[in-house]
Length: 506
Image 1 (cartoon, rainbow, N blue to C red):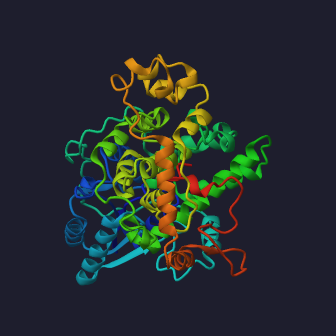
Image 2: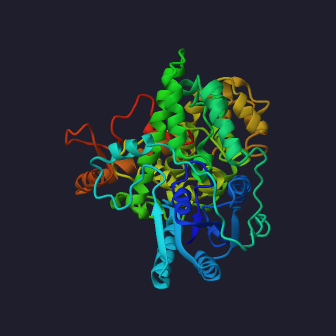
Image 3: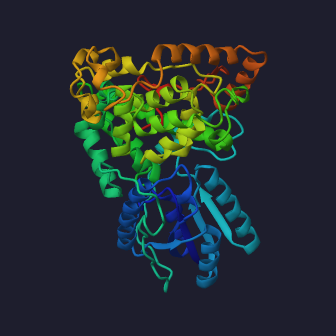
């Protein structure tokens, strides 16, 4: 039997249940489809494609080593699959389930309809703790943990479908992607992912718990595995088992807490992805319906442009946004802060700003991104309103000013005591409004108005009962007690900080 394996966000050979199942059926045609329509979406970018292309190069090498080189085609999935099925007598398609954005959800439904009509058996397998068609969260954590603890699935030698042209990996220019300079982007590919995993678990990760909050220390102390998990060059299961094995060594010092926090965040990753799996419209609709219309659906263009460019006049916020533009990454607390500033201080709709961050993050994972964007914008109706003070965050997370001065060099002349509030500096007259913008809002006043407005909406009749229904749909029962835990995965370990993990950058 000839079997086609459709690779999507699982760009690896190791621990690949779909590839292993296909190999048990007969000859294998490994396929990746580059879909131009997907890469034209507002939440995708050239930096993400560059990372993906590097992952595909590594996957092509790894598949070649086991006997079945990667086949690559450019086009719409249904058309590509139909041509290959007809040309190579494909009897079955095997792939992993994907919790992607609404576009990929619609694409998969179209593929399923085509497969039924064409008489092709399409088998989809889970590759994470996310469960399709989940009736309720009771028992979900146990199922997730069982999947994570199961043995890794080996793939050894493959028997390839003969006579298939490999196809080339297109460039960003060939895909007509907008220019997207990201000079300090992480490199893709499984080999790089394994290097990052090893260095994190043996060297870099010791101060993880204490260092993850600051962009100065988080850049090194965080695992930096999130883009590899998002594209699947590493499986979540192999990362979780590697972390558990390292913890079992009892390395001492700060390692125990660091590894516990990291393992918690891996669990939270599946927890948030399950949210989007259960309710795909989280990408476009406020989780709590009463929050629709809270902010203007068409955002203030000047404020949105200033925020996106890192020109808000709020030094630490601007430094974080410029750093993100140049690197494709930002540590978890700063991700939350820049989103909160956009939503509360600048009063911008989360759908517009969420798309900006999605295409900036090399590690964009829709199943995590959109629930977290809503959480940081106060539209879930079930989470505590958390309005970060960007000035205070600057003092707390960048006490020496090194990060702010590096990314906002216009402030070089500002004394340390005024760095995060240059508008208070007596010498600011020749700086603000000329070399660096005046702040677009008064931080304190904007936060006060936002807080009053959001809490006012939450006080409306019927709000609490709708919030209760949301909790029942998305929360897990803890320890068999029957008590719903508001937006929490069961038995969270210390240090998980679930309300501050925009994209769970790990």
